Image (cartoon, rainbow, N blue to C red; front, side):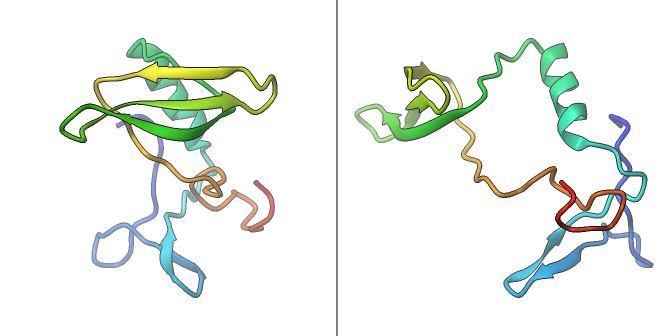
Length: 109
């Protein structure tokens, strides 16, 4: 739909590769598209404010415990940020470009 083609297996399900003993989780992109660039274009199109290089230190919650923001600092400038939001998506690092590089070499991201 957005131009990224993921490899499928013989049953038509998305193919995954086991690159770690904890499980199979990498979706191969045989044409080597960079999903990060595709996601960036879609976010810009939707006018989503993007904040890079921010290390989150605390989730902000209301009285009922609903997460409604985050506190953190910029890892380059050390500036402190408080970001209030209607929705918060928790993401973990070390995902690289979210797929195998076109070369197939795992350390090439």
